[in-house]
Image (cartoon, rainbow, N blue to C red):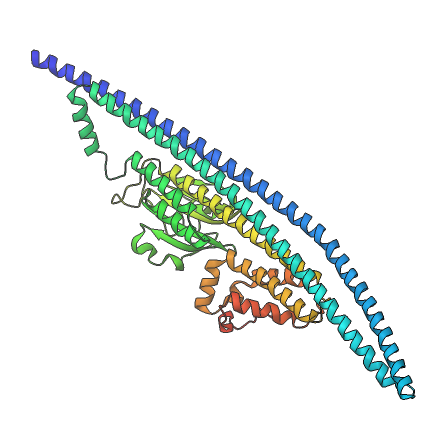
Length: 495
């Protein structure tokens, strides 16, 4: 009878302990999730606000500098011409007086050749004075513009870094506080209950499976966010994103949008079924939820629903097959309102590799943060483009004023062509790599090169000698790394 009563007491204590632990875990998870969500929202708002303000300031400042310098350059050219003409008049008068003096001394009539020689010498000297004044004005204007653009870029970078750092520190602090508080409460509760709590905890830990703990996932997530922030290029950003997602899920893949078709970038956990992710190509019929996520710009979750003939947008990609009871998600990477890539993740085609708890939210969070990092890279590139445009304006202001005007025009056109072609390379790094490998860059980037050429020709007049050659040379130099054979059979410089 006594043993039966002990069994009942032990069973009631274990039940109460289990209920308390379940409530505690749920409250801690909810607190950490709220803290992380609030921090991410503050971070996104602060970065967007500072970036928008900085871009507006840069645009206004560049416009003000251009408005201020154009009248100044015009007035300086006018003043230089007036001064040169006055000097030319003085030289002509002096030449005539000298010719008259020599004629009187020799008691002969002055010849027309002597007068023309004197006039030509005076004109040459006046022209040299004018050119020197214009060159001094141009150099001063370019230095002023460069200093102003550098100052604005520095202000933008400092403001953006400060806002990002403050928001990230706040997020890290809140999550750390929540984790620390959870650990303290867990320790306190453990010391207040009977030894059976420790036994129950040990047994549950042994049955938890191979998936990482929630605290491990949170710490790993924070580290992944920092590595995404530190990515130096779009390619590096995609590699870091795939590695971060692959650490929390059973299988992960990343594809990029190339002219409406999805091309593989990398994969993790698929084994021989995706031996070479770079050769993976998907169309509307085979992309499944990946294509739908890129088209709609929103995450799409998948689970077995029993449909015998589902629509393509409701199916898994062709390379991913899952047994019953498993789930998957596709999350687009959006830059400037356009889906440029997408992440696929699932909880495994087998039981050999488990996904972490809350893996869907982790994938969405990492991809959303990667989108903001990509947009920050694009914003930084925009600042560089603004600075380059200002340099072109300064160069064009004095084109035709100096004796080497044609060369100055060609150099300005060459800088603008470099700007346009570099932008094509920036946003199509993977296509450029593949085109160089297969020697068909012109075909793969036909539309992008054509669009860049339209912008170039709209800015550079057709009267400029070698205009087409300037653009074609820059395509070879920047996209084909100086080897025209990598463009393929069709020349992008003349298409």
